[in-house]
Image (cartoon, rainbow over all chains, first blue to last red; front, side, top):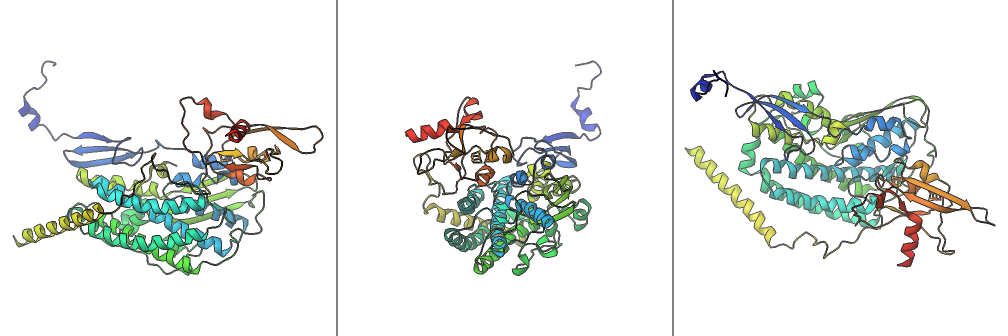
Length: 379
Length: 149
Ligand code: SF4
Ligand code: SF4
């Protein structure tokens, strides 16, 4: 020890308050992927939070510029692997809009059914992982049991469990069978009962409520500032849902509510997602009842996709919020620009401001309630 | 004081319901499949790595080496070579190499093939200590080995 260095412990106690930097991640059980949080801490309190991103950057936008439209088809489902159907939906629809293709109604209905199934599966993963963050292990196992049923259904029609690659320009790559319809019907019934069980087991649990109520409040103004969408925005009391505001596909034909809660705390976001599962079940039920017969592929899809020059845009409501693609075409076989607007990026952006002054464990609850998928942030 | 007692009761109640739900589960049949002793059946549309298909009548590989799959593959993992056999107007495949380390199992090659010469296999137990095993899979050889079985 160098001479003159204070060794007496009473000196440090009288010293100005010391802060330290805590690194959470890039590999950490609470971050669900390679996200690094640089937290400046004052004891147990977060003074300043800085998310460091880019560890899972895979250049999806750039890849869009060096391959044909068809060759980009596998990519969207890999941006947010939990919300693959919605991302595919946005991509095929932006190209369909550019080409002016009419999609047969049966295809659109099946797109809605599979998208909503995917939304439930995504929320179930969030439900399990979020509670795992809070220290509850059991609900994860129940959630994954239910999610497995959805994955089995989707695997039977698409051939894969996560990166479906099922939609095509003008329709779908293949039709669903009677088995899928029956399975989905049975699942809706099963899931309704399970939701009741989840509420009994988790939502009404006192410990959970103490951990979530009034914690990590995000105001609607903060959401506006950072462009947060989806359940985060709806948990701040704004009933904003692309399916209602900019209706696409056949969503206007279904009756469903947009759950929103004004509290803005973690509990509000929790309740939004749980309520959304119930709403998705409602949509699926109606879609199955109305499913029209007919082809699942439009007739006039050109073999070589060459959209006329122009600027096209399409947004969908993914499980995590508004996902939009802006496509600029120069009339060739390869997109000129493919801008991806991913919800997780904006939802993460507000973390720094919202986490200021929170206790460490509350900051992690807040992080979990944002439902981030890191490859979706980095893309 | 009253609030504290109320909260205590509420806590007890959530504890009891939680335990009841768990207990109920305790008497259910397990949902897990005991792989590898039990194996689930794969769905018909399962997308494994691609394989070459034989023509049922002639028994020859259907592929006519048109290279459509080679061109459409987003990851450049297919190399096809073909040659015309004497006395035939169509080409036959002589070499079909798949780089499975890069394949994303998207299925575009299967869809684009004009003569349905490609199909998905149902192999999923693929593991090796050598990268070379999957970097250049010879699908013609694989088709022969498959016939031998
Ligand atoms: S597209 Fe079909 S026929 Fe053409 S080279 Fe590929 S496998 Fe052979
Ligand atoms: S499945 Fe997709 S990535 Fe794999 S070889 Fe076929 S086209 Fe290429």
